[in-house]
Amino acid sequence: MRVLLVEDERYLAEAVARILEKNNYDVDLSFDGEDGLDNALSGVYDIVLLDIMLPKMDGISLLKHLREKGIATPVILLTAKGETEDKVLGLDSGADDYLPKPFKTEELLARMRAVSRRRGELLPEGILEFGDIELNPIKLVLSKGDKSYNLTLKESRLLEYLISNKGASLSVDAIIEKVWGYDSEAEDNHVQVYISFLRKKLTGLGSNVRIKNIRNVGYVLIAEDRAQV
Image 1 (cartoon, rainbow, N blue to C red):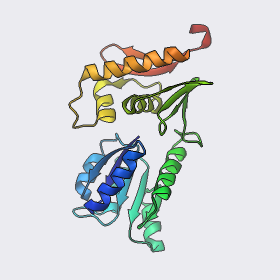
Image 2 (image 1 turned 90 degrees about the horizontal axis):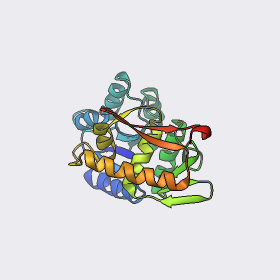
Image 3 (image 1 turned 30 degrees about the horizontal axis):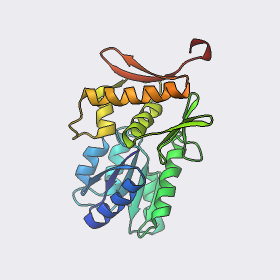
C-alpha cells in the first residue's frame, strides 16, 4: 500500500515514514502543501496523511483542491490542533479521519486500516480478497484455502494494485509508477518478471485468478469460471 505523508516537520515526517515502512507501507514525503498537492493529484496513493499547518498551502486548502479534482484517496489529517471546530472543518472538507498530535503508532496504523476498510478494499482482518485467493499485504502472504506462498514486498504491492483495480486494464507505466514509484528507473522488463513470478504462484495454488496480457495496453486481473479453468 502506497502512502503520501505531507508534513513540514522533517524529523517527525521521517520518523513516521520509518515506522510505516517497517509495517510494509511504501511512503513518499512532501514537506509543503504545494508539493503535497502535486503528488496527491497523481492519484497513485492509497492513503494521504496530511498535516493542516503547512508552508505554501495549508492542509485544508490542499484537501479541498483534491476533492474538487475528483481525487477520492482517503485522507487522514494529522495536526496539533485539537479544537472541535478544526475537526469539523477538516471532515467537512473531505477528510476521512482526524488524528491529533502527538499520536501513538498503534492508533495511526489502526486508523489507516479503518479508512482502507471503509473504501471497500479490505476485509476486517486487513485481507484483500479476489476470486478464490486472499492476499495479506501486511504479512506478505498469498493464499488459497490451506495453501499459501510468501511473497516479496514488490510481488505483494503489484498484486495489491491489480486486485484494487480488478477487471481494469493497467498500463505498464501506471504499474511502474504505482509499485516502483514515479521517480523509479524500473522498466517494462521489471514488470514482466514480477508478473511471471505471480503467475507461477497463482498456478501453484491452483487458483482461478489470471493475470492477462492485453496487447499494446498492459495487464488485467480476472477470475475465470471453474468450467473454464
